[in-house]
Length: 104
Image 1 (spheres, rainbow, N blue to C red):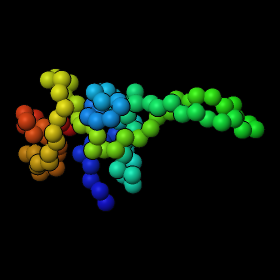
Image 2: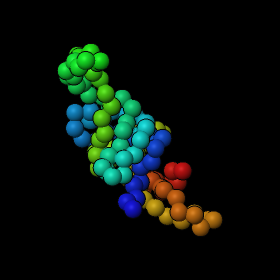
Image 3: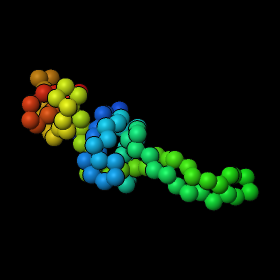
Image 4: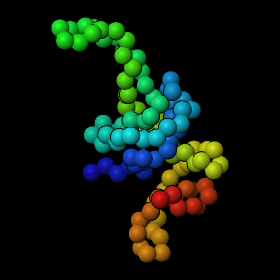
């Protein structure tokens, strides 16, 4: 199973693409597609009408590849690089590689 350093509920910043520098909260992590859903990252899609649905322009959430987002540090207003280490109780926790602070 793949292990990601970004989890549901984390605040992230988009680092590449049309929505670059957008800060939002992760609403879903799609492990099979290596993607995440971020609040505030929406795209417009043109939808053709069918028998029971009206057509038009629809805004919808779209997944972003996990390599194009980074954890956001609210205190220092910067993107964080995340690592893993064990705390005093022997549990595996995430930490900021630059400052050394534990994230969880």
